[in-house]
Length: 321
Image (cartoon, rainbow, N blue to C red):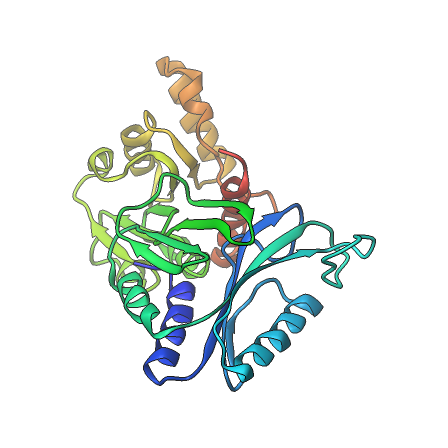
């Protein structure tokens, strides 16, 4: 399953092929430094100039859109890489932007043979591998070891591979009003979200339509069997109280997560942590948790709290593993 924003772009590409409308993909296969277009950004543009997606915006994107229109009017096959350097002092490949960094963009006119590739990409329920090369595009159901890989030997010898589907999974423990606001925000950020609560009749749990999975538990201790650790897993505990928070934490604290946060007032968190230390829980387990979860922005409403936690998660997601 693809994240919604990616799926929308590929559906647009497939619609162009089905309607035999000439269309082109512009895909960022490499980004270095503070380039505005990050690796994996892409857009699809059709013959009429309608587009979906972005490769970083600004004058560079405008230039490439006009270039794509010209190629599409010529109605000829195209498969090439273009390097862009965001520095006006660069001796070549200047993008017209001054934000520093650089990016390499793949320009490719879609062909009818790509229809089956895109259909498989859109319908495959698990992670897979999308590959671009001078031969075009292909899809393999076996996911690669790395999320992205790019190697360029020459203009005629290069390959880009990307793990498709969700690479980051968010597990929200507790389905209250903060979880509802938090889910609404995080569903725009390409996380596969699973929500857990031990009250399946809770109104905010029932109304939460922003997650991919909702699971009602009879006991939070079951989380140990349900939530995997690993660099792609993010966990936030925000149950209804001290006792249920404690059950969830104990079920999970032996696992390693990219992010493990616990929502609560400083007084509640201090009570939890003091109790664990008096119990003799190793400090390394305690230090795994971000408690209280979220950046200190004096948040008060559920929406503000959601923003503070989301910001902290984004920071951890982009830190080196």
